[in-house]
Image (cartoon, rainbow, N blue to C red; front, side):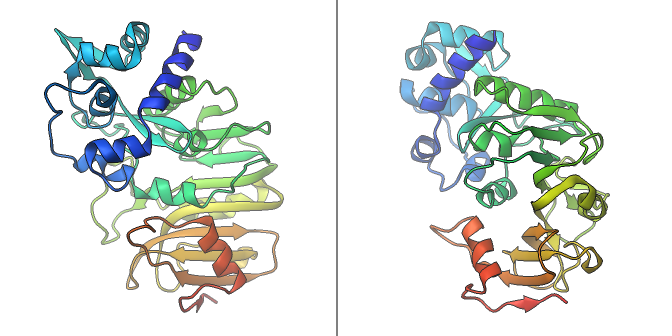
Length: 330
């Protein structure tokens, strides 16, 4: 089945691309897909059938999907639990979000429950946009969910470990990695870095939203937590990181910098905050534990053509070249 899944994944990646999804569904970015409120055209064009089925969460004619992917690929999709046959139609059993180089598996919208794995939101794209262009060292991704960050980046030779406390998210991560033909990521059910050991050159986390924050309600309890995970994570990191390591965390910070690594831990802390000042807001935090002590924050203005924070933003803030006013967090 692994070979069949990898072959299916190759076909799906050719059909479900961010550009194709945008053109088919009329969205500006992948996180906006769940807001699509439309039905597939009739007859459904074969090239659009995979997108309507696995992105828009709509049933499509089995014949249209077979013309797009081939009979063997459709049979593999049904056998692997990606689609359900309903007479002459196929309904989605899971959804597939095109993120970077991979397809991220998540739950259909109708599924309820605390373990539901939702469609990737903006925070996923913010974190991925801040990753190094190549991840050559050992990489530990915490709270990885369905492994969106790992799937977005090309395979690597160094160890890669993705952890989560949600077994369902890890099951979808395994499926996504199988569709990508990837065997370079070790998945583990673990609370933060439990059992990870040390020596990690890159540590990442897309942190759940701590409650209560005054922010908009989270998509599910998988994206919201009564536990402030970054506050627990920061003191653990010095023992996890290799010399010269980099830590990237999407989290909430307040105007005084609370939510970023405590000053007592030292190192260089760069905060790229993209939501307005006043209370806690969303930000990308880069921490280099071994770098000379420095704590700087700057706003990043997003808009059309610039929807997500990027690594270039972090580099510019760190170099003092950012066009927006900086704030000394000390």
